[in-house]
Length: 291
Image (cartoon, rainbow, N blue to C red; front, side):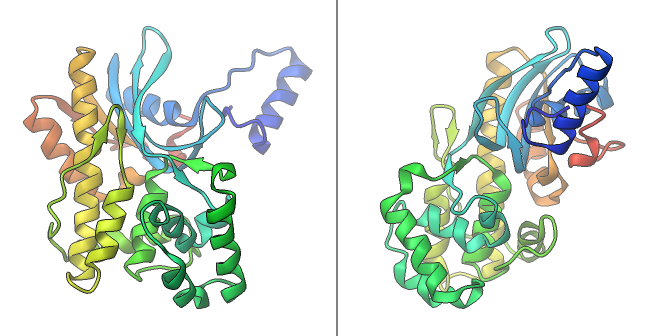
């Protein structure tokens, strides 16, 4: 079962294990994604880029933009790098209303009050809700849940570009953003900012915000995809070389994104490594049980 202690499936597995004296094995969410990719392609080791909306991390935090080393021999994984942690204002509410995600990221570098109040109409409780978000950012930012999720960063870009303000189905903001990006080009040409083992995402969103109106939404949407794909690929290539691994893979719900996949493939194959994606097994949570 999953590592998350409060999932219904985790509770069910624990109950069945106790009843039947079975061994209980809890598997970290992103490890399961990459293990499914390994099994599908029958490889012994891989550096996996695993991106989605959420997975319970080994440290109890919200993961979702991870680079992990997996080997069949050890039957374990090692987290080598990840996206920058960003505040998840309101927890699950930030997944439903991406303006929350955007405000949390932008607030690190700029005053978002006027912008958020101008967009308050997109919250269920309007200006009152926007004021509470601003108060949380100003007073309680150290207490906010943090996430490394790639999906949440794409959601934030979708909100900044007025592409989607509310998620009414799984992956809606990111999918709508990809649809807009297919008509664009890389107008920002922003080099990925990597500090240690972390790909920074704050500066990228600020640059998109500042260029809104100067450049088209299509070009800015595409530029965001290029930044994330190149940055993650760069980290994965570096980690594969450090560990003598020839395979780099892409899994998780975000791996359904064709723009990210294409850019990553070009970077990885240019570096002389093998790039693996799902063909028979779903990259999203439909493939977890296989992993």
